[in-house]
Length: 578
Ligand code: ARG
Image (cartoon, rainbow, N blue to C red; front, top):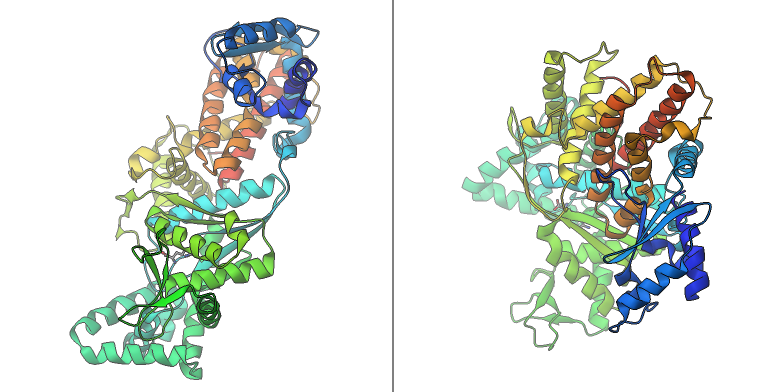
């Protein structure tokens, strides 16, 4: 829809400058809404014209731009064209703006924005997104929570834009911790507790046996022995491990469901024990694997090939490492999914790991490693629950729910709800998500429950509150399925501001899909809510003449649709009442 307007400009540009219309579409950007009444809608920057070679980068840039602005003509669509510092500004016919934008939102519903012509320039791809990836029997810490929600957003966005997405959870399901667990379970384990609260119980056993092992060499030895049995395929040891793994996955699935998250595949390090040997053989054959004096197998990654920067792939006792298994996993996924791109989401502490991994794959001749991406994120400080440090994902969700429930119980505006717990959970988790997505992913941030749960300001609660309010407006006014409206009734500044803002939606999605940062979408939605609040005050539906009321109602309906669409992409379930 925004492209309907962009095209009107692009077709003129194409005639004047030569290249096809499509080339200009991504350069014609909707202008962020300002307080000025007569603000224009789109902008074409001089720098983008220069960058693309349509204006020569010499001293006459200004003169060339002036000439171009003169050659562009107003018509029945375009009301004004202005030369402005840094670019050319365009303002469209107001009636047409209201009519086109709102009609498109009402018609496209959940597909609004994602079908934009901006995306027709991109090829549809097979995308693998690997995220969450906790370690069985260990803490599910804030980093895993970030990976979970960020990965889900990326997968949602790619999926909405029409790419085919495979979501993989790569569990830490191998290693000495299972030797310890195996021994520990014999000592401190209980089948009953394992059934009733598997993650907690495995974690408790693990903590306990670790403590004992610190003091008792024998326990350490037995754990190593148990792990060796696992590695050599001992049936009994394997069946206990399998049991722990299966029961943990069932539990993870249940909890992810509370967030509306699913995975196509639960994979894990355990699956790549054998194939990491194949990778090592291959590296050996290619002459890439070197043995150090200590008997460690390394790959030289230094530019000068002087071993100043190496990645270790085999321990001196012949066992493989995290990195080795990751190489095998990537190759296996290429074989099975033939993906066009694969995205890994982890904290920034693993940046070096992924750089090395991608480098080694390229050195092995896997050209597709060009299309592997690591999305790193910063550290969350101080995420605590009433129980203390975060140990499980479920604790965070429970805490968000109970705190939100408490806030709702003292708020005067809380409605009578069928299921207050469910509402509190959806609102509480949206608060976590918005706090997390507001800034650049790479930034660290401090987590504070009170701040993220505020109902005003840049919070998830504010988004939910606005959504619920827009829903109730529809309900109260018996909004019919009749979508027609008179665009002349939507000329107040508050209405125009919303419509202009909606012009940016596809651009924002485009930007987020390019740099995989959710903040563009979050900021867009927060702004939409602020504009909706102003419109709510200044554009009453009740007691307005019927034609006016109907048009305003449609405007609010469209706003509500785009808000809900955006929230869902972020992984938030919009509530209709709160
Ligand atoms: N389980 C790992 C951890 O908790 C994260 C796995 C990330 N994915 C990968 N392919 N290495 O740190």
